[in-house]
Amino acid sequence: MRPATRNAMLLLASFCLLALAAAFAFSAYQAAAFERNNPNRGERIDIGGYRMNSVYMPRSEGADLPAIVFIHGASANLLDPMIAFGDKLKGRADLLFLDRPGFGFSDRGGPQNAYPDGQADAIAALMRKRGIDRAIIVSHSFGGAIAASFALNYKEMVAGLLFLSPATHPWPGGIEWYYDAARLPVLGWLFSTLVAPPVGLAAINKATQVVFAPNPRPDDYIERTSAYLALRPHAFRNNAVDIANLLDYVKRVSPRYREIKAPTVIITGDADRIVFPEIHSRQLHADIAGSKLLRVHNLGHKPDYIVTDLAIAAIESLAAKSRDLDGLARQAEAQIIVED
Image (tube, rainbow, N blue to C red; front, side, top):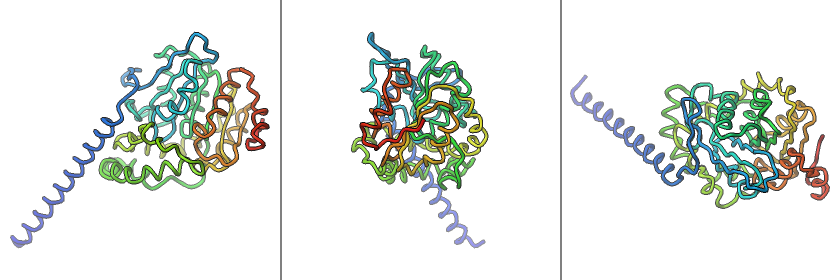
């Protein structure tokens, strides 16, 4: 090789290394900025070798509901359900909002936490640490698979189940390409570190609007829920791994949903294009004997924000507080279809 050619190759290699180092530095800076601008509002508690983050709101003297535990969906953290429900339910029950393993400010823990049953184990351990023996479990989207696993494995800890646009059953097709890319052993780490933060920043506004569609997304939703935390490389990759594992998991576990005996309400929208209700909510309703399915006209993937009062009425019905969900549907002038 000629000296000039060798020098040119060395120069090119040096430039590539510098560019890569700069990209890593930017990613590290951006991840630190996400955390600095979205500080933890919870408490990290050791549950056996790793820490789970959560916010606990204790019941007031006049509380009228059993404890309620909230499980957030994909690409989210505990602030997502807390912003939706916290103020409206504060004082009425012991409320536990948690970051799932590897999300928000919770540690990932062991490899078992890449699956819904492992995360259900983590939530049960956290509940015990928080002094909650039994609760109504409220879940959204991906959290539905975790709630169903929790109901199967911790029957005695479930007072009721509220599924909001759940992802619980096998679906046709695969997953988005970037989830496959992010979960790869080495390249996935590089992708999550170098690509996810800058691209995610550019896409997060549109992506969150799509999740709410056709309903309007609150203008301050991204800031109030600290949605930027999902763009940190480790959180992005954990989310990708969870989603990549879900299909095979629900193929294996969903036949057991018929074992669930807890009082159950499922709320879904007929305009949900993120998790298709005909595949998930309707089959879950068929699987769980005695469950009630509420299909809301023109509702997208976020019933926790768009029909919050209906979700709270469902919680009250699960607590046997005699809220008539059929009556609510009639008052809504057929905008809600109730299926027993």
